[in-house]
Image 1 (cartoon, rainbow, N blue to C red):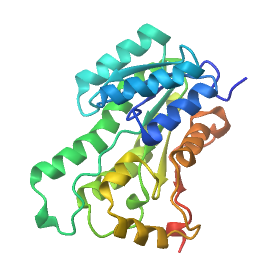
Image 2: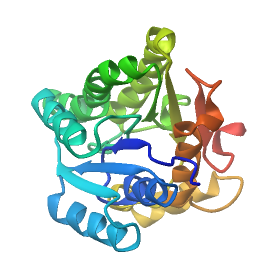
Image 3: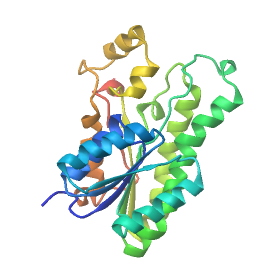
Length: 252
């Protein structure tokens, strides 16, 4: 029996990278997965690939996490196909412009990153909480970043959004604990994903690798396995926790 046997999970940002790795791993552990993303074509390919191995385990939905109507549709489709929701992984996120100074950003740059990375997480929690409350159980995992714990030069909106996600997680954990709903956060360091590949040039990437004590960039599965643990009953006594997965970067 899998670690998530017959559980139903919604995973946002699941077309590629960490989200796709999470969807594949969850399906391999017996879960039914609603994989969502704005990248409809890539999402369709990812879902097709997973279902070749785990037939009928995954459906894909186009989804803008910053829009409440989209969340309502995702919930409706999840209930239609799988009857309930046990797990939410708020994985969707965008880096925004990587720049060194506040004056390099327009207000619209700031708003877009916060809308996806923070409001999207809030709306996800709001959407699944009533269903999980009615069951007396549930697990919500928010993907934050080590940028929520230590400051870095550049990327002000991104760092602010991940800091907000860190505290949103703790506040939601306290709010929902009485209902049997656990809320935890994962804080990745540098992970090889399409998003990080697009955001970093070779020089910046090499510099960042030099700051990782283990000496290498993480892979999407390095995040998927801790997410699996938090989604499963193995972590039943954990809520409001933050799990750092960064090769030792912030241990210095």
